[in-house]
Length: 248
Length: 246
Image (cartoon, each protein chain N blue to C red):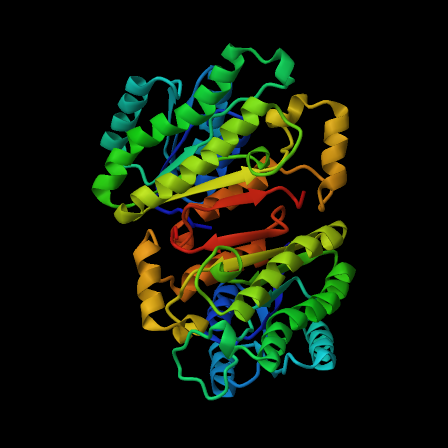
């Protein structure tokens, strides 16, 4: 690929999404990113990255997802990369900032919400994005997963299930979209310095550091670097989950 | 690009094939490249010339990965010349297409020795300096055959699965010295160990590969350059498969 990368990032107002947008922009990409509640963070990021587009999007609406993908595709003149960084980890109402939701604390509405936001939205986004990429001759799709969906770790079950769903989609989508030169991979971080990791109770964080070989949480930039490489340079990795957990 | 600016890399089996591509890719990213090779002087000389042409220093040494004293001498020489080794790629490896009934004990030993024991011995020789400097990356070249049930020679599969296990245990053990250990496991490559594959097995691979083609040395090498770079500093113990979606 020769021209600047045309990338759509879901959840650019979040910690990981913001880092991904910065890493892509540093590599010369033209970026559109979405946000839901983090309007201020989104507008600040748009200012920081001249030429980027910040778009409000509620991932619970399939219609809005499709409209956003179409809008970005026409604004950028196509799409070379799609990164799904939007996600939630907690569904308890009025929850304390640091909480480990156990099974009795997950009700049906919470289950539905986390699966809808993290997994269902991803399916419908890729369904649309892949049509655009197909017309353009291919592209790279990257999901942000979690070590929780790949290795046994104490984590909210519905959250782990949603990330496991992304891992399954990575496998099946790679098979279905390979012939159109579309590659799909997932980067699964361990605990990070920011983002959803901050909702983790301190005892679980300590436990993580005990088992993590590098004895530290991951930096957002370290995850963003992997995502940016896959989005920009990848030509032969597909259907894979890449764990970045400091040798957990 | 300068992903590896200032880095000093040692690649085993670097004279040709994937090893040659690794040397060229690392050099293109700004690294100094040393490589070992076991047999072919001509290809090693040609590869060294190509690497030098990209403007970086290059060193070569004819040494078997099974010769620990010679490997230690090579490592010492590089460390004295360059002050250390930041990146080791255990790339040297062999295969043989043999059904189990025709596989003799010597065949088994040869493949396990070069692929697994060679990885252990070279890592051991290089780790001393990495531990002392509390930094470094080891990248082991595995294979799809070591992580997935496919029809391939059993000694080759066993050796590549061993490399995955070695990667995980070594990553845990040396993480305390801030050394990362990774395994890159390619599928079938354009001219690698799979070149003597029977026609039907190549067709089978292409049928099941989502991207519908074998991998190129160059794309594997460019990914390897990213994996061993400082940009990828939180990934360790991981086996990354690069197979076009088999």
